Image (cartoon, rainbow, N blue to C red):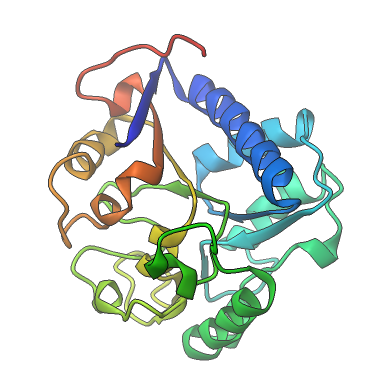
Length: 249
């Protein structure tokens, strides 16, 4: 079952998310000796990254990946890598050799192909998970935002990428409804195989998306297709149709 926490405002969401991420990374390192985490772009994840950098966990034995990327250069203002670099990677002093960025400048097709290879080489399969997940690399944690249309990573409502095979890891996007149109994204199968997804949402523009995500699974709301027993959702009052404050646990 999905774990849903509602906080007072966007700052409280970022603080709660930072605590949850620290806990999950610590648990992964204690249980498996290493943690594999994928990051996303966006304002709320960005503030969470700043808090993680200010009071960092032990980043040794933690490998960093990305859930999606725009097909732009690493220093472009639209780059998810640039956001993570400025808010977390550089301030926390995470060595470059433990950061695996999506090479958006290669374009959707080649960028996706190269990143799938990176994932196969660096992320182990989940030998301790059900049989279907043992065929895929299994990330310990994926940090996600959600769009007002219910999209996650660069998996958009009704898109052909939602029909990719269960063994697909990374996909090229040529026609994103949000600019820029060309992107690279982790597949739905890969997100569903992750041990835990932490999804963050703030603001009234996300209310309908959050409500739809918690309803029946639908290709029209990609976030609703995530594996709910492995999903933690942290939102603020504005994004919640029925605010219930976090007790701070």
